[in-house]
Image (cartoon, rainbow, N blue to C red; front, side, top):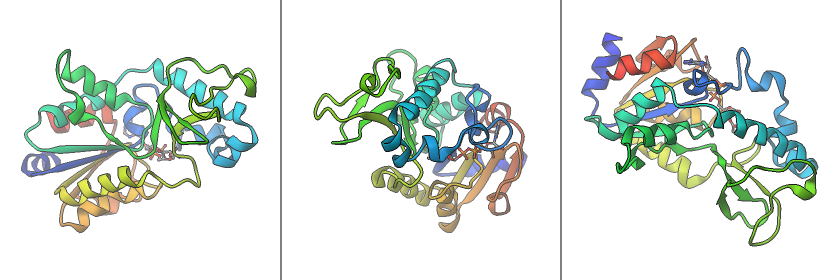
Length: 252
Ligand code: OAD
């Protein structure tokens, strides 16, 4: 922890990459490991374009369940500490998240308070956002305002512009990431001299390569995770434990 704190204190520009582990203590299930979503659900049936083409009702049922679950959760001390770092820390910081749960946004609003501007702590959401809809036909984006009626295909939400089915604005297996968003993440990583990686198995690329961009530019990597990952060998410091206590302690 002492070495990690020294790296934070001396950094001139920080990029933070988070994964499902940062939201685990908020009650959002991770994907891999104990209790992970991919232990109980098959991604190819729920999170691919062909699954949506085959059975959009089933896919929407799963996302409506996850939306409901996330709505019950609140940001935890790790989200709040990262929002404080980005909003009022001494070092320019860019947050990048693989999470679609919106908890970094909520933490940013909580920390900024009424009348404050939370936008500097809004993360680049490289895998999309579960609370946004995208038209499967014309691509128009819309905030998911109402509850989705998953009774049948006919009751699923449709685009107000072209009437095609709406889908959650998340990245599915086999889809490419938004080049502007992932490009901005890699740019921030190259510019940073410290990459703080919190709660990701570091298995899913290209997001998992973000810390390498900082390292290739001569910067350092700090990892916070319950267990070692493929990134651990390349990190200057790995803090093993829960993000909800380690991240606030690191950034205090
Ligand atoms: P994973 O579920 O693969 O990994 C979660 C990581 O968080 C694991 O390494 C855990 O050890 C760690 N972890 C769990 N609880 C923690 C805690 N309280 N504190 C610290 N660490 C903790 O999630 P991601 O790496 O985010 O993609 O998964 C990457 C992508 O795979 C996701 O964005 C999703 C998934 O398929 C898409 O949906 C496109």
